[in-house]
Image 1 (cartoon, rainbow, N blue to C red):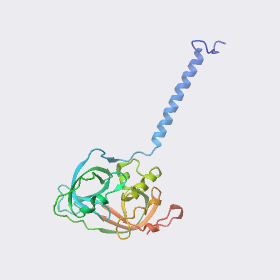
Image 2 (spheres, helix red, strand yellow):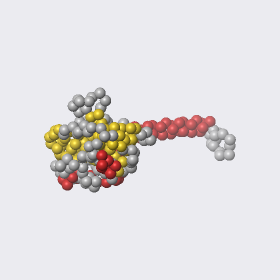
Image 3 (spheres, one colour):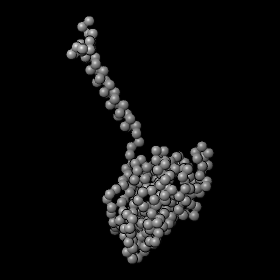
Image 4 (spheres, rainbow, N blue to C red):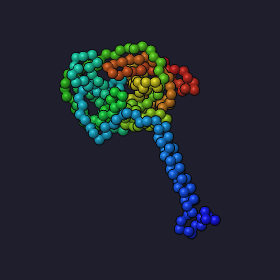
Length: 254
């Protein structure tokens, strides 16, 4: 009867107390192991950056086709092939930069903005009202190179969130946000599933796609066929959005 515990006694019997301590320790260790397994099983955050609240100054040439971008000379590489970098331009929130830069096409400008970057690709969120034409000579765009027809599997995402404004900026959890960003004019990109290469999506004529053209196909596995083009560091994939099909009725877009 010495091991029988009566609730109003100040201490539990020694055997029962030792047993309870072992149970508490075991449960604590089990909880720690489960927590560790849950953490390690999650998708790691991408190595992407949004320099929120840290505006910088940029100078370069604005181009509108196919999507607004700032062509910037790389330091120390003037006159060399592919000596310029193209930074996609967007407005604050879920909006493209078309309205902000419409009157600056082909002009040298100075502007303020916040950097967004991932895997060597860079974007600038423009501070409205900060764009000033400098009157410098236009450098002209580098020529497009046709790399032929390709078939690539991957996912359609909005470039702003994917490059760093949201993390994660892809997958089903980001579907609704991506659809709203694309509807607001954020440039769409296609990310390959094998190596994570990024391709700006354009229509068969090389122009920007309509804001709602890809709404039903974001954040899901899809295979595209199209003409691959390259200008500097940027790759473009020409597709026919009318030929897109969901995986259940797989017919590649051409």
